[in-house]
Length: 101
Image (cartoon, rainbow, N blue to C red):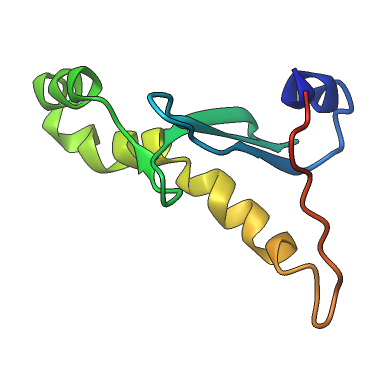
C-alpha cells in the first residue's frame, strides 16, 4: 500500500522493502520515473529471488534474451538508477521505519 501511494507522485524515486517473516518472503518495491514500478520477492538476507517457474519459462524462450530477461527479473535497471541515492551522502542520518502498516 505504501509503494502504491508513493507511486502517485510521478517524479519520486523510492525503494520500499518489507522484511521477510517466518514462512513469508520479503518484498522490495522500486520506482524510478523513467522505468516505472518494479517489485521482487526477497530472501532473509535481502537477495532477490526468482521462482523456478519463471526460470523454466525463461529457458524455454529465446536464448538470446536470457541476459536481458534476467536483468529485468532482478531489477537491475532500478538498482542502477537508485544506487546513487542509497547512501544518502556522507554522514547522512538514515531513519528506518519499523512496523509500518
